[in-house]
Image (cartoon, rainbow, N blue to C red; front, side, top):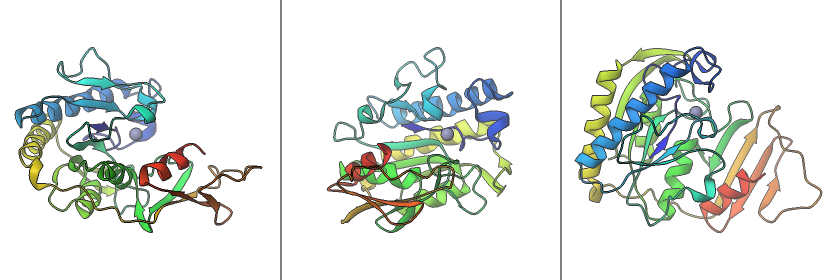
Length: 262
Ligand SMILES: [Zn+2]
């Protein structure tokens, strides 16, 4: 389970809610996310999962706590964790909880791609993607299907575009990037539990996304986030323009790690 905060019901403002231990409503946000994560874990176990690994994915893994996380999950928290993120053949499925849509998504609540200040756009083999697309493709390479997502209407649309028969818990709907209709927490968690159970029960029907080569990740950075050309050229890294770089890998995972190590 990949977790984030911007897609949790009730969340609509970064400064007010999402900055760890700085936002005035941080403790409330933490509780809202924890409730959704625990509901998803309950649903997965209801549906037959034997083990659930939860990655604390929002802002360097400072959010979830062993104090109130579901007693049966294994929590991966802190930073950096990427090489340890077990999206490989040891897991049977991937789900997203509290996931936000990609940068630029229409009425996507708190839409951004990876780092809102530093990244303008990502393309995977020419297809515009955000975290939903990237992790779905990384998982797909290991033959792991992404079976469920919870988030706003735009995030659900983005997920269903990749996995048409996946299960989606649409817990909020944006009317702008920073406003929208929110499901009450009790209703959001009930919906998430139900969808997670359904996804787990339908595991065999939901196929991994099909990644076709060549494997290229193109990143357009913002003016603030732009990378400086290094002295020594790196294999697989090509600068296409003043703010745009291309990362090529033998596998999609390799291209992503190349980009993340810039
Ligand atoms: Zn986040």
